[in-house]
Image (cartoon, rainbow, N blue to C red; front, side, top):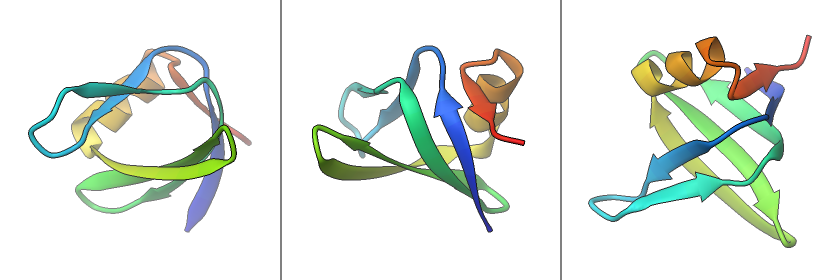
Length: 70
């Protein structure tokens, strides 16, 4: 199930073994699985997505960096 949410503060992901990359503040879509959350967003008309480990996703929620829409 896909949920809508907003990035309110710094949220980052790592592409492979590369550096951490910031996800822009604003609206996102989240699809939660058992071990990760796939986050999708647009930035300058480009579509991006990243899988965030569930541990980090839960931390972002608890720290109010990601705010899920009701």
